[in-house]
Length: 295
Ligand SMILES: CC(C)(COP(=O)(O)OP(=O)(O)OC[C@H]1O[C@@H](n2cnc3c(N)ncnc32)[C@H](O)[C@@H]1OP(=O)(O)O)[C@@H](O)C(=O)NCCC(=O)NCCS
Image (cartoon, rainbow, N blue to C red):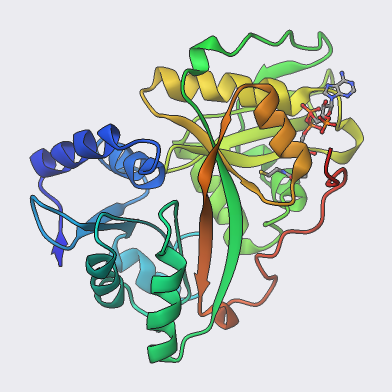
């Protein structure tokens, strides 16, 4: 196992992962962000170099140790070319006494976690998401903005409303996580004529779009569609792939992605929670949203 902290190797890794998009989406985005200032102190672990067969990106050790039950910070992205090498890396690279989450698009990530967890007596929970990827966001037609709304970016004064309305939020960890996201990563929001927050969408250290919400009284008017459009174009302009994760039962968000030409990837993205029992107030199970019936 190697900690990859040499800038030329990290750039070489970025180039290699880019050639393998979209199956490398999450690790590619993480490495790209690390190579551009690494604002949230992430690191890259590989099984070997230069012929790596498995990668994990995640928080630097000193950050994980600060709080053993914060899934938002203890988030890893995994990718492999050889599942055996990935299993070996996973069992050694992460502190299995803590709560942590791994996500990625490759088949077998869940099974690797499951088998190691069984040996170590660790409990898992898994959430399945579709990954939506747009091969050419510059081709997404512009959507005309409602003249009563103003396009803006998020700031700390919005955090309470964001935390209250995000289905995975509502606790101190989620608030701190969103605070960090809006300080470091591209995001957009719509404000009404009184300056109140109506809808928002935020990207993260993986270059993924997400945390999208429209406050309930303003849903179904195309607001989040506008933000999805502008954020995809912004990330594309910064050289990131435009993609996001949508829960398998969130039909509204799936239709929104598909209307804009995002392609649903054949593999599911698994978010695998390890030691979820360490973190129970509240769980990461999303609150049910409206309009989640199939078309
Ligand atoms: C998912 C969510 C962000 C969508 O926000 P939104 O602003 O309502 O999104 P849009 O209005 O752009 O699109 C949603 C629906 O409104 C419809 N719509 C868009 N413009 C419209 C208009 N002018 N008049 C009426 N309906 C309209 C869309 O067709 C779409 O309907 P469909 O699902 O039947 O296709 C919002 O429902 C929400 O906050 N849900 C809870 C949190 C959540 O699930 N977030 C996603 C996490 S990935």
